[in-house]
Image (cartoon, rainbow, N blue to C red; front, side, top):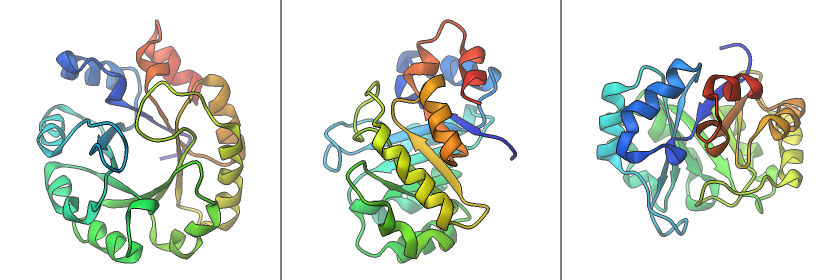
Length: 212
Protein backbone atom coordinates (compact mmCIF):
# COMPACT_ATOMS: atom_id res chain seq x y z
CA UNK A 1 0.00 0.00 0.00
CA UNK A 2 1.39 3.38 -0.97
CA UNK A 3 1.04 6.42 1.24
CA UNK A 4 0.25 6.45 4.94
CA UNK A 5 -1.72 3.56 6.42
CA UNK A 6 -4.42 4.91 8.74
CA UNK A 7 -5.47 2.50 11.49
CA UNK A 8 -8.28 3.93 13.66
CA UNK A 9 -8.18 2.63 17.22
CA UNK A 10 -11.50 1.12 18.23
CA UNK A 11 -10.57 1.84 21.85
CA UNK A 12 -12.33 5.16 21.18
CA UNK A 13 -15.39 3.56 19.55
CA UNK A 14 -18.73 3.06 21.26
CA UNK A 15 -18.57 -0.59 22.36
CA UNK A 16 -22.36 -0.79 22.52
CA UNK A 17 -22.39 0.05 18.80
CA UNK A 18 -19.15 -1.52 17.68
CA UNK A 19 -20.31 -2.75 14.29
CA UNK A 20 -21.72 0.70 13.49
CA UNK A 21 -18.47 2.40 14.52
CA UNK A 22 -16.30 -0.08 12.59
CA UNK A 23 -18.35 0.52 9.43
CA UNK A 24 -18.15 4.27 10.08
CA UNK A 25 -14.34 4.35 9.82
CA UNK A 26 -14.19 1.76 7.03
CA UNK A 27 -16.57 3.83 4.90
CA UNK A 28 -14.56 6.95 5.75
CA UNK A 29 -11.35 5.49 4.29
CA UNK A 30 -9.63 3.59 7.11
CA UNK A 31 -6.99 1.15 5.85
CA UNK A 32 -6.81 -1.06 8.95
CA UNK A 33 -8.57 -1.39 12.32
CA UNK A 34 -6.32 -1.04 15.37
CA UNK A 35 -7.39 -3.29 18.23
CA UNK A 36 -5.76 -2.69 21.63
CA UNK A 37 -5.57 -5.84 23.77
CA UNK A 38 -4.74 -5.00 27.41
CA UNK A 39 -4.45 -7.46 30.28
CA UNK A 40 -4.41 -5.30 33.44
CA UNK A 41 -0.83 -6.49 34.13
CA UNK A 42 1.48 -5.16 31.43
CA UNK A 43 -0.69 -2.03 31.36
CA UNK A 44 -3.14 -0.86 34.04
CA UNK A 45 -6.25 -1.35 31.95
CA UNK A 46 -8.28 -4.30 30.62
CA UNK A 47 -9.89 -4.20 27.18
CA UNK A 48 -10.55 -6.73 24.43
CA UNK A 49 -9.88 -10.47 24.25
CA UNK A 50 -9.93 -13.23 21.65
CA UNK A 51 -13.76 -13.61 21.36
CA UNK A 52 -14.18 -9.91 20.48
CA UNK A 53 -11.47 -10.09 17.80
CA UNK A 54 -13.21 -13.18 16.41
CA UNK A 55 -16.51 -11.25 16.27
CA UNK A 56 -14.92 -8.18 14.68
CA UNK A 57 -13.35 -10.37 11.97
CA UNK A 58 -16.84 -11.45 10.89
CA UNK A 59 -17.92 -7.87 10.16
CA UNK A 60 -14.69 -6.04 9.23
CA UNK A 61 -13.64 -5.58 5.62
CA UNK A 62 -10.14 -4.19 6.38
CA UNK A 63 -7.15 -5.92 8.04
CA UNK A 64 -7.14 -6.26 11.83
CA UNK A 65 -4.08 -4.62 13.37
CA UNK A 66 -3.95 -6.23 16.83
CA UNK A 67 -1.69 -4.62 19.45
CA UNK A 68 -0.94 -6.99 22.34
CA UNK A 69 -0.20 -4.87 25.43
CA UNK A 70 0.05 -8.01 27.51
CA UNK A 71 2.49 -10.12 29.49
CA UNK A 72 3.48 -13.53 28.06
CA UNK A 73 2.09 -12.79 24.59
CA UNK A 74 3.48 -16.12 23.33
CA UNK A 75 0.62 -17.87 25.16
CA UNK A 76 -2.00 -16.04 23.09
CA UNK A 77 -0.45 -15.68 19.63
CA UNK A 78 -2.14 -18.78 18.20
CA UNK A 79 -5.57 -17.84 19.57
CA UNK A 80 -5.44 -14.29 18.20
CA UNK A 81 -4.09 -15.50 14.86
CA UNK A 82 -6.93 -18.01 14.56
CA UNK A 83 -9.45 -15.34 15.63
CA UNK A 84 -8.48 -13.35 12.54
CA UNK A 85 -5.62 -10.96 13.37
CA UNK A 86 -3.79 -9.89 10.21
CA UNK A 87 -1.01 -8.13 12.12
CA UNK A 88 0.06 -9.08 15.65
CA UNK A 89 2.21 -6.57 17.52
CA UNK A 90 3.81 -7.55 20.84
CA UNK A 91 5.83 -5.38 23.20
CA UNK A 92 9.63 -5.57 23.32
CA UNK A 93 9.37 -5.02 27.10
CA UNK A 94 7.06 -8.02 27.62
CA UNK A 95 9.13 -10.72 25.93
CA UNK A 96 12.29 -12.72 26.69
CA UNK A 97 12.93 -14.46 23.36
CA UNK A 98 11.96 -11.93 20.71
CA UNK A 99 13.13 -13.92 17.68
CA UNK A 100 11.04 -16.92 18.76
CA UNK A 101 7.92 -14.73 19.12
CA UNK A 102 8.42 -13.26 15.65
CA UNK A 103 8.86 -16.78 14.23
CA UNK A 104 5.72 -17.97 16.07
CA UNK A 105 3.59 -15.11 14.73
CA UNK A 106 4.77 -15.68 11.17
CA UNK A 107 4.12 -19.43 11.44
CA UNK A 108 0.39 -18.60 11.40
CA UNK A 109 0.69 -16.49 8.25
CA UNK A 110 0.30 -13.26 10.21
CA UNK A 111 2.44 -10.11 9.91
CA UNK A 112 4.77 -9.66 12.91
CA UNK A 113 5.01 -6.32 14.69
CA UNK A 114 6.95 -5.17 17.74
CA UNK A 115 6.24 -2.11 19.87
CA UNK A 116 8.43 0.00 22.14
CA UNK A 117 7.23 2.16 25.04
CA UNK A 118 8.26 5.84 25.37
CA UNK A 119 11.11 5.16 27.80
CA UNK A 120 12.65 2.36 25.69
CA UNK A 121 15.68 3.39 23.63
CA UNK A 122 15.27 2.77 19.89
CA UNK A 123 18.59 0.97 19.42
CA UNK A 124 17.19 -2.12 21.20
CA UNK A 125 15.16 -2.91 18.08
CA UNK A 126 18.15 -3.08 15.70
CA UNK A 127 18.78 -6.86 15.97
CA UNK A 128 15.15 -7.59 14.99
CA UNK A 129 14.32 -5.09 12.25
CA UNK A 130 15.13 -7.48 9.38
CA UNK A 131 12.61 -10.02 10.68
CA UNK A 132 9.78 -7.62 11.49
CA UNK A 133 6.96 -6.45 9.22
CA UNK A 134 6.02 -3.57 11.52
CA UNK A 135 7.63 -1.52 14.29
CA UNK A 136 5.27 0.47 16.51
CA UNK A 137 6.63 3.54 18.29
CA UNK A 138 4.43 4.50 21.25
CA UNK A 139 4.24 8.27 21.71
CA UNK A 140 2.23 7.96 24.95
CA UNK A 141 2.46 5.49 27.82
CA UNK A 142 0.38 2.48 26.72
CA UNK A 143 -2.81 1.72 28.61
CA UNK A 144 -5.31 4.52 28.05
CA UNK A 145 -6.63 6.52 25.09
CA UNK A 146 -6.74 10.30 24.83
CA UNK A 147 -3.22 11.03 26.14
CA UNK A 148 -0.96 13.85 24.94
CA UNK A 149 1.69 13.19 22.28
CA UNK A 150 5.29 13.04 23.54
CA UNK A 151 7.38 14.87 20.90
CA UNK A 152 10.70 13.38 22.09
CA UNK A 153 9.48 9.94 20.98
CA UNK A 154 9.19 11.16 17.38
CA UNK A 155 13.00 11.27 17.20
CA UNK A 156 12.98 7.46 17.43
CA UNK A 157 11.12 7.28 14.12
CA UNK A 158 14.00 8.97 12.32
CA UNK A 159 16.53 6.61 13.90
CA UNK A 160 14.52 3.50 12.97
CA UNK A 161 13.96 4.78 9.42
CA UNK A 162 17.75 5.08 8.95
CA UNK A 163 18.35 1.46 9.99
CA UNK A 164 15.37 -0.52 8.68
CA UNK A 165 14.60 -2.38 5.45
CA UNK A 166 12.54 -0.52 2.87
CA UNK A 167 9.35 -2.57 3.44
CA UNK A 168 9.16 -2.07 7.21
CA UNK A 169 5.96 -0.38 8.33
CA UNK A 170 6.85 2.23 10.96
CA UNK A 171 3.69 2.83 12.93
CA UNK A 172 3.06 5.51 15.56
CA UNK A 173 0.38 5.41 18.25
CA UNK A 174 -0.46 8.01 20.88
CA UNK A 175 -1.83 11.54 20.71
CA UNK A 176 -2.08 11.49 16.92
CA UNK A 177 -3.91 14.39 15.27
CA UNK A 178 -3.36 16.39 12.06
CA UNK A 179 -0.46 18.32 13.60
CA UNK A 180 1.37 15.41 15.28
CA UNK A 181 0.75 13.22 12.22
CA UNK A 182 2.87 15.65 10.16
CA UNK A 183 5.70 15.39 12.70
CA UNK A 184 5.60 11.59 12.51
CA UNK A 185 5.36 11.24 8.74
CA UNK A 186 8.10 13.84 8.16
CA UNK A 187 10.36 11.67 10.33
CA UNK A 188 9.54 8.56 8.30
CA UNK A 189 6.41 6.99 9.80
CA UNK A 190 4.11 5.35 7.25
CA UNK A 191 1.30 4.13 9.51
CA UNK A 192 -0.66 6.14 12.08
CA UNK A 193 -3.00 4.95 14.82
CA UNK A 194 -5.59 7.46 16.01
CA UNK A 195 -8.54 6.92 18.30
CA UNK A 196 -10.14 9.94 19.88
CA UNK A 197 -9.03 12.29 17.07
CA UNK A 198 -11.00 10.23 14.54
CA UNK A 199 -13.96 9.08 16.61
CA UNK A 200 -14.59 12.39 18.36
CA UNK A 201 -14.36 14.47 15.19
CA UNK A 202 -17.43 16.00 13.54
CA UNK A 203 -16.44 14.46 10.21
CA UNK A 204 -14.64 11.13 10.40
CA UNK A 205 -13.69 11.07 6.70
CA UNK A 206 -12.12 14.54 6.96
CA UNK A 207 -10.23 13.51 10.12
CA UNK A 208 -8.78 10.45 8.37
CA UNK A 209 -7.89 12.52 5.28
CA UNK A 210 -6.13 15.13 7.46
CA UNK A 211 -3.79 12.43 8.82
CA UNK A 212 -2.54 11.54 5.34
